[in-house]
Amino acid sequence: MRYDNPMGDELSPAQLTELESDLHDLKTSLEDLLIATETGAKPVSLRENTGRLSRMDEMHNQSILLANRNVTRNRLKQVIAAIERIKQDDFGFCTNCDGVICLNRLKAYPEANLCLDCQSEHEKTDDT
Ligand SMILES: [Zn+2]
Image 1 (cartoon, helix red, strand yellow):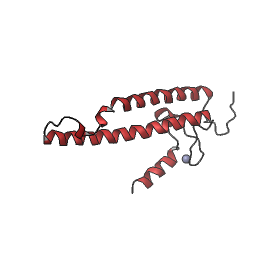
Image 2 (cartoon, protein in one colour):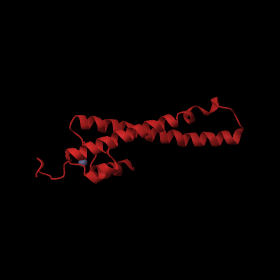
Image 3 (cartoon, protein in one colour):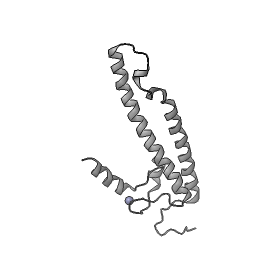
Image 4 (cartoon, helix red, strand yellow):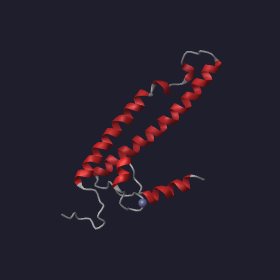
C-alpha cells in the first residue's frame, strides 16, 4: 500500500495520532512542573529571612529555578503550537524550509518545528 507521499517519509495517520498523544502528555507534565515550582518562584524577600548567607544561597537557587521555569514555559509554548499545527494539518513539516521532519526526531521532540538541517543552522547562528 502506498500513501500519497512522494517523499515516502511523511507521517501516517497512526503515527500522527501517537505523536499527538505524546504532545498532550508533554503539555500536561510541563504544566504540572510549572505549578509545582510556583512557590519557589515567589520573591525571596517575601519569605522568612534566615540569615545573609542562606538568603544568598536561596536567591542563587531561585535564579536557577526561574531559568528552568523559563525553559519549561518556552517548551510548553512550542508544544501548544505543535498541537495547533496538527489541527491545521501542518504538523511534521519544517517551518523554515517546509521539509519533512523525520519521525525519529519527532519521537524525541514532538514539539520540533525545524528539521535537523535548519535546527543546526539555527544553533550555529545562536552561538555567537
Ligand atoms: Zn528545514
